[in-house]
Length: 267
Image (cartoon, rainbow, N blue to C red; front, side):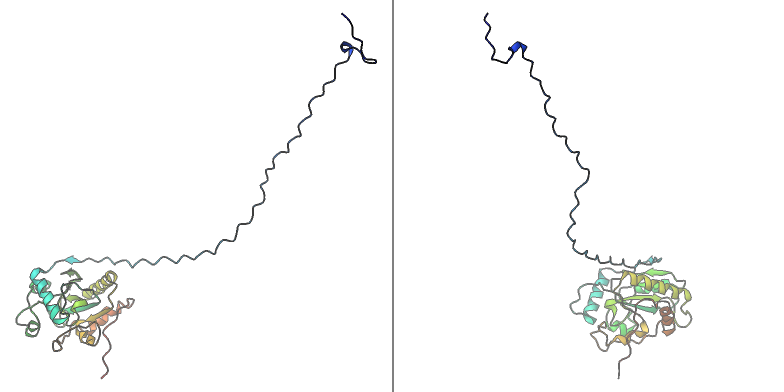
């Protein structure tokens, strides 16, 4: 085996020291992530808030009231008589018995018996002996309520059906008859209290009611838009229930927005 001469000054391979290996360079250390969040950009100005209108107030609660229902006869014959009366006295185009209550009219019956008054109202046809009333139509008189002498309230028909109880205003009036008169059977304190409670009850149920009157005050409405009577000569003079009773009832209802009769017309 021949030995190849080494270049001058270089040792043979087997005598050459091994090249020193350097460890690989360390990767640059990573900076720890900052837990800081970048500053938030200010939000654009929000539009001004629109004020929410307050919720409407709930309607007033209907006062609780004990009312006994004892309907009078209101059959097909009475309905037909009622429509016929309305056509003659109020509106020739009338075709039903319904009313939109705007007035409460207080009365007294002229006697001392609730049962007797109920039986009288129960008849669909008017008494022939009441000449002026019978001449104006065959429909019998009646009312929506009877108030007995102890204050018991009896309903005779729905408040939105027409009863014949006050000339010129039947088409929008609720009638309340008090058992009694201005003589042997004067109206009682219990009846006054019952009328006050009933008026409050009706006004809460029918917010369109604007007036409270006594039967003796109805003629003051002749020039009022509410009054509708097509026969100019058909009028009756009434004295019930009287100024004293109406004054007592109104004194306990001053918080309600109820008008009385219109002022007298100028001469």
